[in-house]
Amino acid sequence: MSETSVLVKKERVIVYIDGFNLYFGMLEAGFDYCKWLDVIQLSKNLLQPNQELVEVKYFTSRVSNNPEKQKKAKHIY
Image (cartoon, rainbow, N blue to C red; front, side):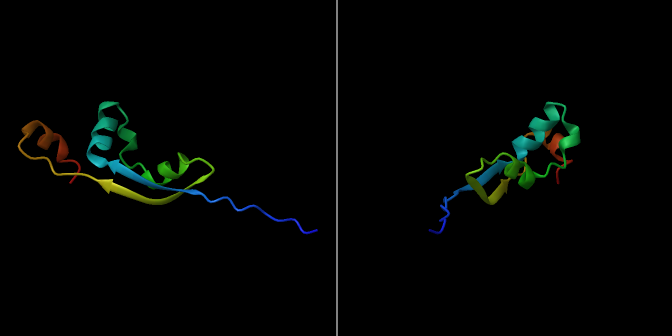
């Protein structure tokens, strides 16, 4: 009798990242060295064995009408 393998369908995962909050959150927490964080690799490392990464969507926005945030944001653009 031949051995049959059971195919387990993996859960597909799409990661959505709020880039503005991620960036400034890392700075506020003192993680300046994480400015060049590989968000795709981070996402892969957070997956469970039954999951597969399908896509990573990174969103950010320009800062307007807030001089203090514009001053901080000049390093992003």
